[in-house]
Image (cartoon, rainbow, N blue to C red; front, side, top):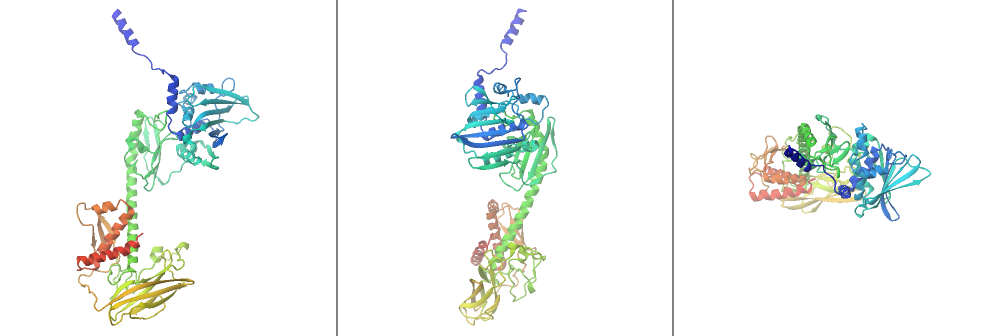
Length: 607
């Protein structure tokens, strides 16, 4: 019997309850645990919202040479004691035992604070805190605390008019945050307290007397398209609210984690459990609000990985597949749009290149067929023998006028800026004829059609012009070979500019093999075929008029990292196919020379 009693006594002596050995040391650790001064300011504002304030004013200014931060609200203030005075003594002596916890147990809703440590975060903002509130006797009471000092002081002062609510002043501000502007506070609070502001209807204003500006804190509005089809994420501990928007890709896009309307983390992907698509995809904005999560009391920007967190992670898996499907469709749409934009840019650049290249040598771009009819689709009618296809003007299809629509103001051509001759370079046999056209343009390369006088002349060499005035003229080559330079002068009011074309007159032209000459089908479209490990980069199917690009080639993968580089790469592939299609039977050296020539003129106009 004695042995049994001894064992019980020993067991009792080895157990006990944890206690704080040094209370002041514990308070200091708690006070310094808040490492974000903006988060501390947000906690001050949340105290005002918990007190049912309708208006909160934040003032950043300087008094007696000391910068200060003041927060004024019209809420219920500090609860009164039996004497009718604000119970500052309870606030100062009940660290980690907030009165709000009792209010929550009594069923009060809409209260966020519960740890009783919010005021201590002033240590990360300034040196001294003064909290003021009126009592029932119309006397204003002040509680003062100093950083890293254990005491507090309560004073009273009778005034003529008492201010409803609470006033909190932190001064002087710490040197490292004296440059904390009102605009930064506005942006932070708009995101941090987004739903608390929306649900409470509180009006928050910031008066930055240093910058002499005022800011209104409005709940942050997410951008993009709201995703309505998400399933509801429910756990045994409560429902998770998800408000997610699909947005164009951007590394800054993120889904924030909230608890009861207050932001805990700017990005859910900061948690290791969510460092995966769709949360880190860069296509989503919005918020996930889980009111049952356990947050770290000191910093309030971390989550305790307990059973509640496990339920949270499992519940969100129900919406991940839906979000991934939406993002995949968005990526496909972006890829299609990018392909259309690239094709349009390449086509425009090649059309511009024709103005400076011998058209009879580059007949792949049959922009208009016989009789001026435009080809349909990417194909088109073949030009009649001996005819010179007209160059498509800026405007028309590019401006959306093919359906009879009206031009907008900015689509009208401006004043004359330059004039080009089409073609700018050509080769003619002796005695042959060729029609040249002048294309006057404004600074944005739109065709100028009104009030422009055009005059043609032969600047150098021999030959004859059918007309010296007008948009077009026909040049007749001389009987002997040589180089002739044609000149056109455009005049619009006081504006004058000129352009030139070079004609090489030869005794014999290089003739193409009619059997191998490809059909004139205009600009083809392009498509992709993934063939990693194969050497070919592109192929032109003349029967379908489509260029197939190997998007598994190492060069394509490198080019695709930057949109501008990808555009140049595809333009080079077009130039390669154009040269191969127009110069069959030429030597490798001649093909390379043509490739350099065409790339030079197309890349100059590539946008």
